[in-house]
Image (cartoon, rainbow, N blue to C red):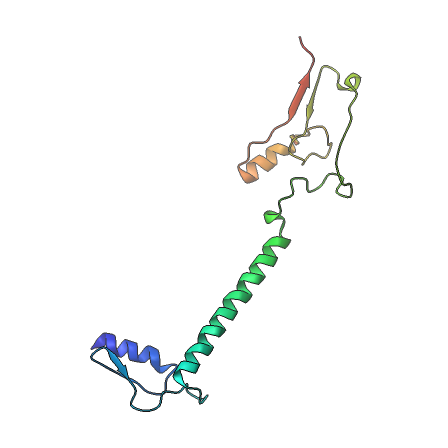
Length: 138
Ligand code: FES
């Protein structure tokens, strides 16, 4: 039976020798891991524990790599006055003139004013950010 041969071949990597007979796996000798002397059940346990350890290590590496990367950060502000606990700006009404655009994307080099940097951000991310435009009534 072809599937029995595949099953047997799959088990041979861990067992010394086994025979599939009528769907029941029987060993003709004591099953041991090759080159180790460990019993088949002990060998499977070691394989499972080793596999789980590798998955855990991979998950930990992925988690810390993602946490370090700016793509996964929950920060909105990544460049404006980063050393301060809070960014607050005051603008006198007299300095606004007839109309002024204020940045809401936190990417402007002229913060708190908009310099158009939101356009690059929107193009790269598919976002839809834009400025707050303050103007005098006409
Ligand atoms: S640069 Fe930030 S909203 Fe325009």
